[in-house]
Length: 114
Length: 114
Image (cartoon, rainbow over all chains, first blue to last red; front, top):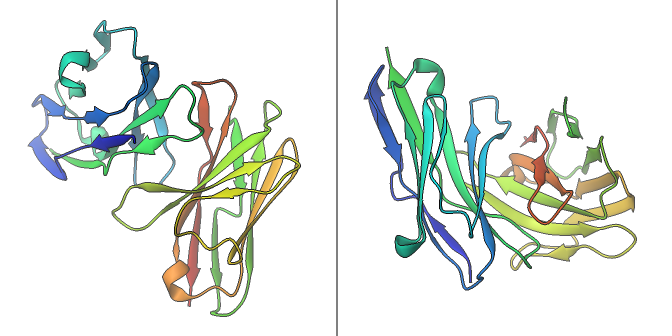
């Protein structure tokens, strides 16, 4: 069974603060993919990153960074110097290599206040 | 540009009527498309996998006679909510998969049943 847990339901920060969104996953697959999506109020999912299970290198993209740790089955997402435009719901998702579907976590609602 | 389109983007219908939602793959042919449902402030839940030329595969708890899926071509899948009721009001999102790890989501259709 595949499962994604995002324990933080809501996070509120003040602009320019750093914030980390946690994601813990469970899977029996040896090959799998992890994703982060942003969902602004419009509803459309915005793809942020994809990671495969064999690549544990951390990634940085501008103010965004991701920490993938297979040992703890975690794929955390950090926003540095947060901005009001970062306010959205963020979803972590898992897809197994031989599975047909993508499983999403419950999402974390991030509010960045000016 | 957009890879997946959905039509309509929002729809309001009366209880007891049926509503059809279209999902189109714009950039490539897709033998498999997925339909998700998202209730307010909740995560995306997979409803069904739509297979071109064959019957859709429904997730446990999803009524196949209520949510009719037709994948008539390699670029079009439709979801028909039959005899809609207020509890069917939700955000419906389709997605298409190009490779084992590339999945693209549509912009979603917001259904309100009055």
